[in-house]
Length: 315
Image (tube, rainbow, N blue to C red; front, side, top):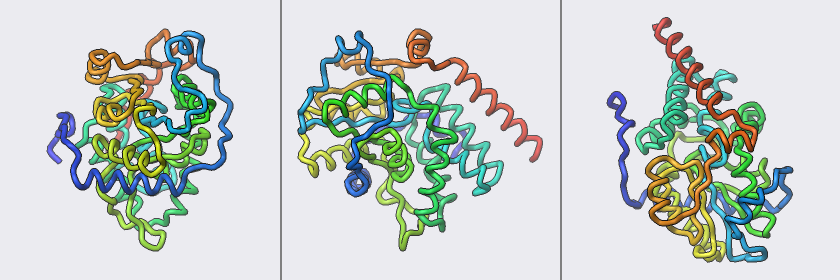
């Protein structure tokens, strides 16, 4: 990979691999969807949000909601937090942790999900899990969620998901993170299930290859389309939520698109089309939901600088 090559966005339409990845994600999601509708306690939507968003419609079983994960439901990237947990358990070396830290710092500070950047992170993760049993990673994933992810859920976005559940609708995560990790997060939040990147396994052991490609950009739209067809959903009555312009294909599929913590391109696109926006990163919003947004960015930047400095001293 050329130095900093992933800093330049690369947009592309759906390909055969995107369709394969989407269909694989939809199949995996249907196999692992939850039958227990019990969700953890969450704060209700505010009066202002209720006035602005009469949707969802209670009792509409042809509607569902699809939520992007990274920086929409959760602060930061799920794959990075998963990598931290695997490093703690000695799955890989310090130099790879520095790489994960730098990728996460860029994601947090720039708010950009470049396809090349995401592909690089996926490749790193696949090399780490190759040869390990799926059941082993699922068990570890439960522990990692408690250690690194539970406290990073945006309360505001979670309240939006809960509103759909309270209306009797199904709610799915849609993410480039591994489907196993996404499924754990969905279950912990009381959601229906998750669409995620499907890693190939044979006999319950990861091969180090993907089925199709990472569930990113157009592949997310294909996954939602496939799941909606299989579940008999009416996409015009469904909602989708994301922070990234890379998810415009998914957002454009549904009748109720929402931009959550949007990057600059998505914000511009959403305003031009009068999509609804929510931003939980600003000082006012952060104060209302109890999240020190600026402190979080400073912490990751400082931590990354220290990790890079240590890496350089060791070379």
